[in-house]
Image (cartoon, rainbow, N blue to C red; front, side, top):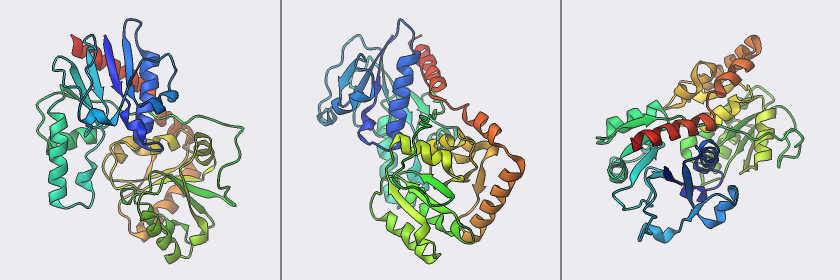
Length: 348
């Protein structure tokens, strides 16, 4: 069987979509059978992230308008984002589509914008033969809000954090114990609810991720409101080494996101056995399971109570080993093997 795996979204570095395409692409190559072939659809400038012996199809933005003719020997094309503009027109190809989330349904958007997004998603879904959802929550959202007359398979993402035990030079070195959060700094991530947790303690708060728009200013304003502005640090994107260092050394990981299809950072942090505090919205309870602590609301008194009681519970019960065991259920090789199983089933 010959497939093409779409890595077009690797044009957005320091994002979950980059991580998804990169890690799953590597794992699909690693786990394929000898009689299977895989090519990656990716920009030339991103191909260095893979072994140079990997077959590539060069992705180009002009393909939005005129998609190149594809080798007739290709059996299956896997499009890895639900509103992709890069789909082959060859009707003989089996087309698989990954839907990560319908987060626009859970964000503060007008009804007109939601209808527009539904129409956009429906258009791409209609072209697919099979849908992959990255969580049961995402599958539920698809069935509830879109017209789907094709199978949907849930395949969970993996999570992997490379280890650099000798690394000790992060871009910002905390002066005392600290809390960590990670993600693109946009309103959906809800980071501005976190500075209140620094009242009545000595923690620093480190938020890593690219600032998009002016949302970072709202976080800083909240830090000033609580008088903790000297202990709140927005440090921008981080390298793999730095990400490892912050996960490994933080006292807890905080992820109060309003909408996630999966939430890779939560599982990354759990791989270190850390206490993880999550929003109870969308897919996060499904991913964090019983070993995470949850904010039922974002009222500051409630958040501080959950945080204080969660740290006390973690200290008392020492669940680090159980947390790590839970996190290790989500790995990219298992994810890749589930994809190959699906691809082969679609060829029968």
